[in-house]
Length: 324
Ligand code: NCD
Figure (cartoon, rainbow, N blue to C red):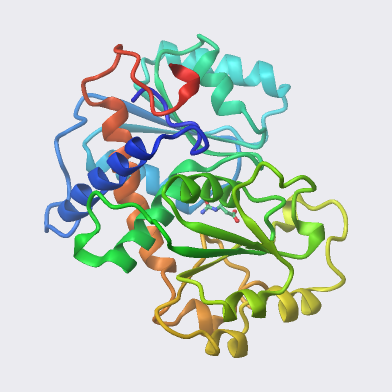
């Protein structure tokens, strides 16, 4: 495995391999001493051009628990044009002999550019690029679903037949995109639920069903309901009449939440807009996996960094087709 850039080109076998290694990592995380010597001497650079709390500290915790050295590089606010600044930064990291670069960037495709430009020899992990992809988030979501639904017998398994509703601001969401591709690869059935203004115009290539009625979709029975954050910072126009109206029709308010039956779990990648897309009643309930998702994120990122950095470098193995 050379890079982890997207889930769209991630094979089923590679996805399950990452999830299984993450199970092994999770086992070590319940020990009193959580640190493993696996990546001693390796340097991981967290290169964040966009704000982030949980993703950055999650990668930092993951790298440190594998004994790698971590350099946090927050490049937010750089005034240099995007291409130039990325190249200059990449060449600096190359000179510092980074073994892996975890990059979050506002421009879709920036991690791919970094991985294929020849500027660096490090492995590249996409930690969110524009509205394109956020592969480790989808992997930690799949890990969380697999554990909740298959329990102790989850190793080696996919999500065949699992029903997932992804609700809300799909248009601006890289989390939704990465989830759609990965869930399809793992055999799950995905329904997108959103107002038409918050869905991409052409969904013909997406392996999903689309619904404009959240109550109907929930009544049909879902194993997981993934609420997306309304990304106000990416909106330069009005995509819905009012927050009140949005929350009434598309939010998981208390009443709607209380109508859920069976073992339906409620997911959210964070940060949550409480009271807008999700109510505290839902977010803080026993159905909610919000904090499990955060905890599982560390195990999944440990697995990704391990697979990227242990041995196999130079053999041109990659998790994504681009590098092949
Ligand atoms: C997501 C992101 O940044 O894409 N958050 C995250 O990684 N924890 C989703 C979001 O910002 O809504």
